[in-house]
Image (tube, rainbow, N blue to C red; front, side):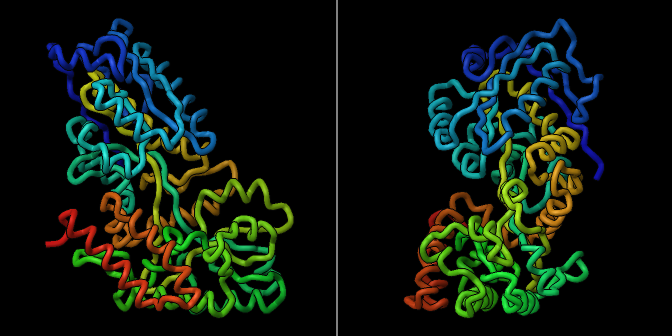
Length: 445
């Protein structure tokens, strides 16, 4: 896809006294009289002139791995291109993020920028800039997968720009499948149906190559992949949708996997660790996601493993998760913050960030990144993400909703497996909670 060159606005020379006071929060120094725009490509022509006013900005950050080091290297490069810009990467614990931002905003001392997740946007979008005011918003949205809209949009507002995304998918014990003589799908043209998958899984177990058929992470986010592939969803425009025939087919199919002993029930009933079970070599398949690639690459020594395509029901799907970067209003350096964010999330810089951090990119033009390890496996995950059904985006786009639905699934799926609830009763109970949420939040008439 053609990369968009973002348009830039010139900051007004006469900032109000209130805005100048707010400047003390997220930025230091005075704003440049004329915006020194950084093109997305970040080439040397975007360098700031030596006489530009100095600007110092804070970027609130947390880390799950090596993201801090990788982001700092990109910041160093940007500062070299823009000698008047200083970006302070301030690392905090994720659990402190919302409180810190809320207090900073309430005190008139918003940081210039922050890493964020979808809940940050749903809670604080009013305090965030609208990137539509700085760039061609429609062109920017075309650069990103449709399935990640919830990571950066708040209605018509572009409240942030995505940096990375996770994807659910199927990790398998390659050694066990080969020992059983079972070939896995190697491309989009030979993907299993769910019935074919069950037959293949049973054959691997019956061969004695493994003790267990499969483990599925918690009965919410990861299981939702099966739900969407059967054509179901948690909700739709009419309200709760778990009682629909498609959703119930997904629930009943999953229950059969457990009832027939192909899926390990202790994962959902008593919280046994699926990662440890798969690493033991006793399990044929783990439905998890991209976050497990580095773990398994480093820690599995006794057998070969790989990633294959999730089976298809009525459609294909994954369930995305991810993070973004936002800028805040009232700091006096909104333009400079937007310039950095659009630079660091552009194709080249984002590819390097995702490559070094082992993330899938949310950009459509970064679907085939070459990683230091497991590029083929990441390519399968990226393909799953690109084929994610719009139903997943609908569920994820309602602020706070999936927390309610996922919590209910985690509470009620064990009841179904234990025979204390029928699939229909679980679906009806969660649909009632969905309808209440959607009614209270204006999603239903």
